[in-house]
Length: 88
Image 1 (cartoon, rainbow, N blue to C red):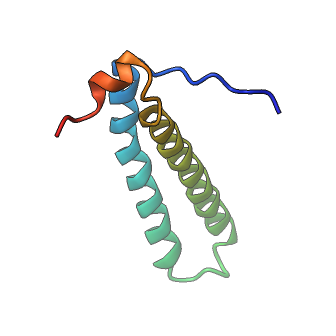
Image 2: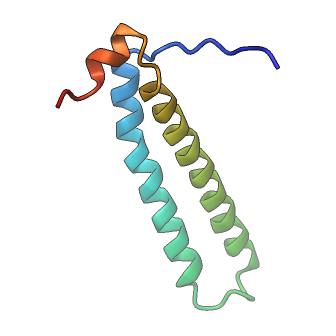
């Protein structure tokens, strides 16, 4: 397996990822609520499939966003990452 070079994200990209993370989380919660509170699951099979697909999509996007932000915080050798980490 080839070594992967870690490059820090630009501060603007990090801010955008942090903002969109809450949107994806909200989409996951709403999709899950629609799936659980659907009154008649057998009659609305198409609706159940659509809500399940939305739940999977929002979960995947949220997961990718979290991984991207986690990888960004792990690049301690980069000046951009160092300037974005909170100082204690």
